Length: 609
Image: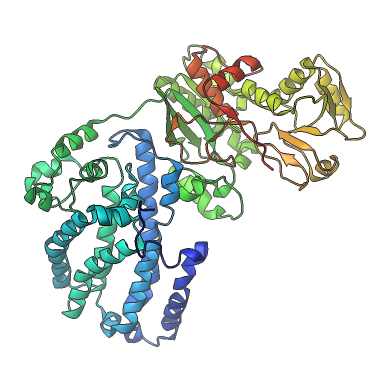
C-alpha cells in the first residue's frame, strides 16, 4: 500500500477475493456461445474468441518468468541486487493478475462497442510498423514524463510508492501498482492500439503482439539478474539507447531518481537522468559467478500438487503452509518428467556469513516406497552429497524421506574422504520432542512406526524418568529391548501426552482422553487431526531467528519462518563447526544441540491447535 493511499487505490473487485476471476465469466461464456453459433468462417469474431486464450497465455508468460527468475537469483550468478525478499513483499504482490483481468474487461468492452475489432486480419505489416513507431516515439516520451511526475512527492506518496516498496524486484513487481496508476498506463498504451484500429491498419498480430512485448520487457526489467549479452551492444552500439537491461532498471528501484525510461533509455540520456553507475553495474552483474553454499538442505516433493508450492512455483502458494485441498496430478507428474529427473535448486537463504541452499529431489513421497524407484532415488541423494562436497559445502542435511541407506551412513562408508558432513537431524528432533512435553509430566503414551528416531526418543524419556506406555505388546517388547527403562502396554489410555509418529490411526486417536490431550508428532509428516478437543504440535521444527534472511516461502505444512529439525540441525552443525556426521545409528548430543539452537536464536514453535 502507498504511504498515503489516494483515490482509486484499491481494485474495484478486491471485495470478491478469490472469486474476482468470475467477473470475466459472462463475457467468456458469450464468446464461447458466439463461436458455437457461427455458421461459417465469415461470421467468426476471431478477436473475441482469442481474448480468453490470450489472457491465459499472459498468465503463463508471467509465471514462466517468475519461476525462471527465482531459480536464477537463488543460484546467485548474474544477480544484480543482493538484498533479501520477505513475506511482506510476496503478500503485496499476490494480486499481479489484477491487471490481466483489467485487460480482459477492456478487450471485451471495446469489442462490444467497436465493430472494427470483429473483422481484424491476422497480420498487416503496415499496422505492425505503425505500432512500433508509435511506441518508440510518443509512448516512450510520454511515459518518461509521466513516470517523473509519479515521483513527485504528492503522487509518489499516494500511488507510486506502492510499486517502489519492492526494492529487490521480481518479474511480477512490474505490474504491482494501485488501480488508478494502471488506468493511466492503459490509457497511454492504448494509443497505438486504438490509433491503428481507427486508421484501419490494426491486426490480431499488432494488438496481441504489442501487449506481449510490453509483458516481456516489463518482466525482463524486474527479474533481478542480468542476462543481456554484451555482444549485442558491441555489434550495434546505438542499441543501448533503445533497449534497457535488468540492471539498468534495478538502479531505478535502488536510487529512485534516475533511469526513468520505460524500455528505451534514450530520454534518460537526453534529459540527464541516466544513472552514472549503469554501465558498471551491468558489467559487474554479468561477471558475477554462481554462489557455493555452506549448508545444503536436501528435500523432496510430497503430494503431486506440492510442486506448485515450491518457491519456484506459485509465489503466493509457496508463502503459505501447504494443504492438499486440490490436485493437478497429471500436470504435476508431467512437470517432473519434463525437468529430466535431476535434483534442482529451489531456495537460497543467508544467516550471518553462512550461505544456505535448499535442493529438491523431484520425486514424490509415494515414490520413496516403490522398490523400482528406490535405487534411482538413492542415486540422486548420492549425487547431491557428492556435488555439495565438490562445491565446498560444510554440511548437507537430509530432510523428509531422504534418509535412506541407514540415514545416509552408506555414503559415508562408500566415501570415507567426504569433507561435507551428512546430518539427519535426529538429535535436534529428539530435543524438540522432549522440550514440547509440559513440565511435571510423569507418563506419556508412545505410538508410531518404530525407527531410529523413535528409539532415541523413548531412550531419552526413560533417562528422564518419564514412564512410557504403548498400544501394543510388540511395540513394548522392541522398545524395552533398546532402552534403560521399562515400557508398558497401556490399558486405559489415560495419558494426557501422546508422542506419535507415522501409523497413528483415527480409532487410536479417539481413545485419547477428552479435553486436554496433547499430540506431539515425531514423524516427518503431520498426523491427520481427528480430534477437535485435543492440541496438536507441529512436526519437529523451530522458528528461525530474524537474522535468517530471504526466507519467503513455507517449508511444506509448517508456518511461516518455521524450519524442520533436519534443516535447523544442518545450520547448527555449520555454525558450531562440529566436525561429525549424524547418520546411521549415531545420535548427536541432544542437550548440546538444543543449547546451540537457543544460543543462535532459534525458538520452539507454539502448539498448533
